[in-house]
Length: 125
Image 1 (cartoon, rainbow, N blue to C red):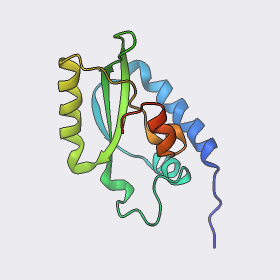
Image 2 (spheres, one colour; image 1 turned 90 degrees about the vertical axis):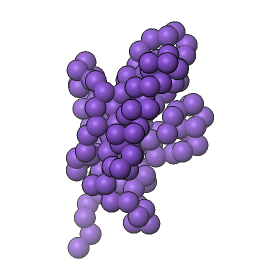
Image 3 (cartoon, rainbow, N blue to C red; image 1 turned 135 degrees about the vertical axis):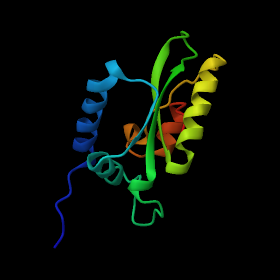
Image 4 (cartoon, rainbow, N blue to C red; image 1 turned 60 degrees about the vertical axis):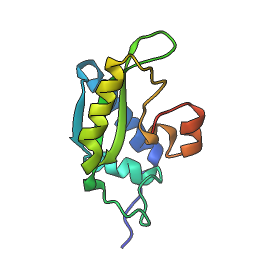
């Protein structure tokens, strides 16, 4: 029996609303990906059957970074393999301490899973 597929755009809206709701309390953190997030990644074509990394091995690394345009602070996120999460967060903190600007650090599903769109937006990944 084939499961009903939820359009990735609908899942993306749910995900983005969840992120926006928690943005006020955002801080540097490492977290696991819940089932909804994994579904969003699958629907966006980020996670596929050909992908050798299961979703439970991925971690969300959230961090505050300096933006180049106005030296403001922004919330960023990278999804990385679990064994790289601590090092990724340490690097983000070090870059912030050095006042190294990062234009964007948004999750790839914000770009519909499209690496080209992510790169064209100067997004860190």
